[in-house]
Length: 163
Image 1 (cartoon, rainbow, N blue to C red):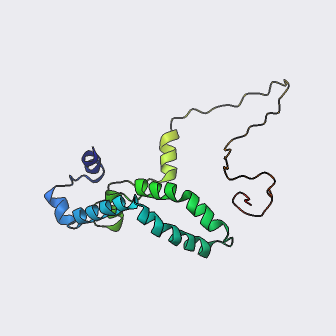
Image 2 (cartoon, rainbow, N blue to C red):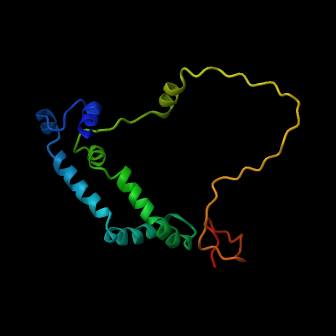
Image 3 (cartoon, rainbow, N blue to C red):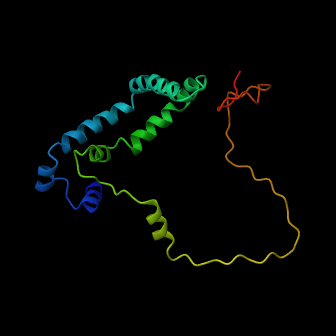
């Protein structure tokens, strides 16, 4: 499946002589990135990445109290997402130039135009004049398991106020 997709995007089979000559370090890069990705699942990687992320957060934000708590809470999700979507051998090595790119960069405007090209024009209905209703719609509610009753709701923090 992956080879078929690679062939489709690049016009080459990964084991073809022409591709190997054009990208002699592709297999080495893929192996190193795969090994690095395997290491991203370890607690050691997260133990190294969290302090670095906190330092970066401190450098680029004015509110330094939020960095440790926010990063500690979201580290697993961010590392897993990065490993799944960015730190893939063919993507990373293609970006670095060691392999042929196995992805296609899309132009958002072109994509929207291609997707909506046959959408029919819709005329808006004429208002009926009937009674209208006021409705409260609540979405994107977040559960805070560390909430403490009576804490300050206006603490000027971008993250939930905590005691």
